[in-house]
Image (cartoon, rainbow, N blue to C red):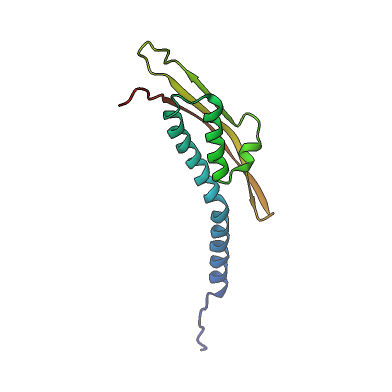
Length: 132
């Protein structure tokens, strides 16, 4: 009887191939996902501190943050970032700053596959005034 030695070269190569594909996909997807979440967190901070700023300046701050995060495709989309303020007319009720993010990011996986990450988020924060 001849002894057989079982070598799993095919299984090992297949596992390495799958692992490589997962890493390559993560390299493209994770930064885009993180940038989108970071933009939403930054919008919450910007909305809170928007008490005496005009709407145009608040929107510029949001667009500058998107540019810093490398989200140029967001800046090109019409209606991707909408800023509005309401309330706070001196009657003691705090005003509210609302920032709406409605955009789509296209992730290109090395020319093989493309998919979109849709973001529809509304951030509404009270405007903090007269804090000493």
